[in-house]
Length: 112
Length: 115
Image (cartoon, rainbow over all chains, first blue to last red):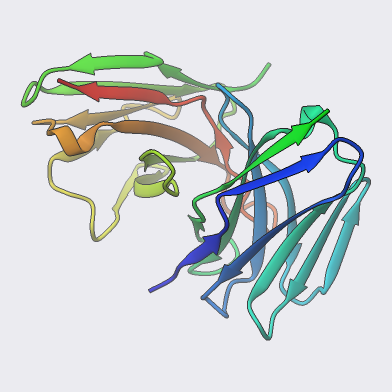
């Protein structure tokens, strides 16, 4: 079945770049997503990428997609303490507007 | 602000005692989802309503039921909670068909403890 894998923890220093990696299994996923969850809050869509794109950049965020290897990454440039959160990778199944399968989330800790 | 609200934020119940979690939304979205998230695990979709149509995931236990009396409200009923049902329960909404991608809006969750 469909599965999304990501490492559980990442620790970086403030000002460094963070790279969070994810692998997925459903090659028919039309969109892939990154959601962010801050303490005490719900998940919030951070960014997404269409499957025919290799890269998407949005201010400090860069998403890279390697469709051949089913590998997705999220790079956060100049990481700030406010970026500390859990980041969830998700793929859609059943079409672009189908349901989402989430990874377990990567907890990003940013040290001053 | 338009939002997804979950009540209560924390719920304690006894083993086998029915419990209901509620979700309301001011976004006027036609799709509402319920996820179960256990500690350090991925949110797992239990079921969703597409308008009034109920869609159950194949592996959702019969112990879990849902009601959607109107567009704004959706309830999760756990008929006989077991210790293994202790988790965070997340409600989410989206509007479909809409944009080409499926953005879901999440509430803050209800943490359920089963004693």
